[in-house]
Length: 139
Image: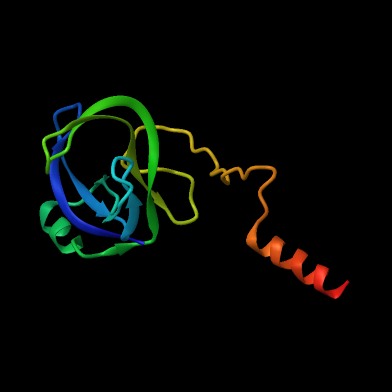
């Protein structure tokens, strides 16, 4: 579920103005690659709309089924507003309606099916180890 948190008046390539809705996803905890500490954040993106400003104002606060997903893109420079630090990113975010593979708020992209992280071949999961221990007790 995502929420409309605002809107912006933008200009397309033909010079025509349109309204883009700003969306925010749900709260998530992310671990810092620098410090290892966790922090709370929420993914944000914007999507084009056919609304005028009056309707866009009324849409603020509305919830929409779907999620904001991370999408790979060409690397670009980004300035962290809070610190002024410049970093290089190779991803952006886009809105994905519930039950769809289509993305809004981003150019055409292909979606890869999410892959489960690979476990080391010699790793034993906790549940598998418990089952082995139970079997060993009965022998």
